[in-house]
Length: 521
Image (tube, rainbow, N blue to C red; front, side, top):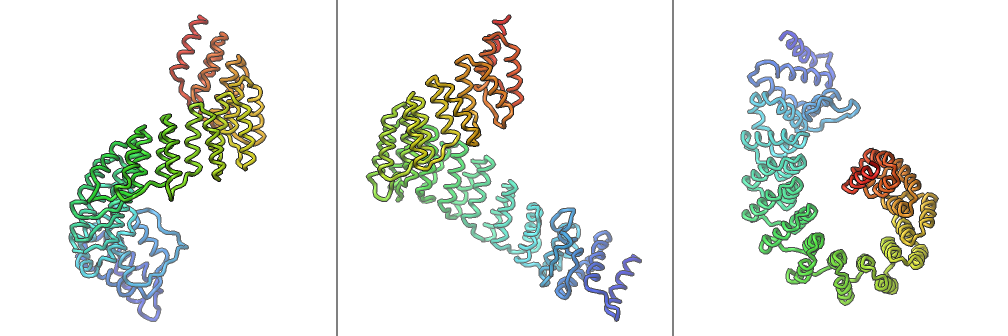
């Protein structure tokens, strides 16, 4: 207490001829605050402190040390702002925000200044206080205190801030509590807050909670924009919950939700992903009943879906339909999807004709288009046509990538021209193209088929030095070759290298080893 009296005396003396600078007086006051929290108090000291800040703070520039102490406590961290971070307190409310943050962080001091806070705290200051707390739970605590004990009518911005911060931390239940308070207090939530809560539930896998929440807000008459539903449907599809997405769509049609073209595109994509192309086609046909029309994304998604399940003719028919519709034009994705489908079926004649049609219609093929055709010709044993397509690729200014070269290597190896494939491997180094896992697989498998085991083994050594995470099908042909040659020890060494590369042996690997050990036994 003696030291405290000395400090108070120094403050009194500062009004005399030897006036103490404002920043020094600020240090003295803050020291008194720290002492007050450790001593019993009837609240007079804290109220006087608040009064001092509110009435006098705007008259002087606070020291960096002083500001740093307030930030340190309000932010809930042990370190303060850097000394060089200067701040000028321009109005009494700014000081009040800082003091309230400090007092609330030291929760046992709140009762001491309850009367002052009830008279001076308003919704805008409460928002600034909550915004300063880095811990959303601390902000929630202050929100509940000021709402319940001080009867603060919080603004929309405060509710919005709390819901966002709590959802970012995965605290959905707390965010839902704030949402309920918002509705109880007569503030109508908008679609952005609804979208935040729904997305947060979905990201945490709480799909039932998200759907229940949507059902709940309908009872309150809150209008939800299509974007909220579309975002939720998209999340369900990405999580392979396509049936749930379709069910949600059916249960929340008019009057709650008016779907748009994006809604249907999401559903079509999801159904095509699980092979339900006929259902996807039904949704495409029913779009007009909801006042929207398919765009090129709708058609491309469905065409690609048909081609993935080898129903290429349906995809081609849909292309012809697109060509007859005004306002929708096929693009390179449309043609490439069907060309890829024909290549997978081995119908290179149809693929070539469609390619020529695309070019004649003024649509420029891209790298993926050429790669699909080169791979298709190579698998069909038509290396002459594959190389001709490669020349067209260069002529149109498309640069070959690792997929292009790997397709050519595969074509040569299938034709029994492994040495030509090895030449392309060397050309890749000159072009600074890094091989991928399939480049290694193609060459290693081809070398093993020609019983060139040591060369294949050298490729595995090269693979060991790369950053590629391989698959068992790369190692299995070499392991099988060494086992058949009676070199089981070398096969076991390769298995050890597999594990070093984080590649776990599969059933085929173990079967090869068992048979190899039995033969050599």
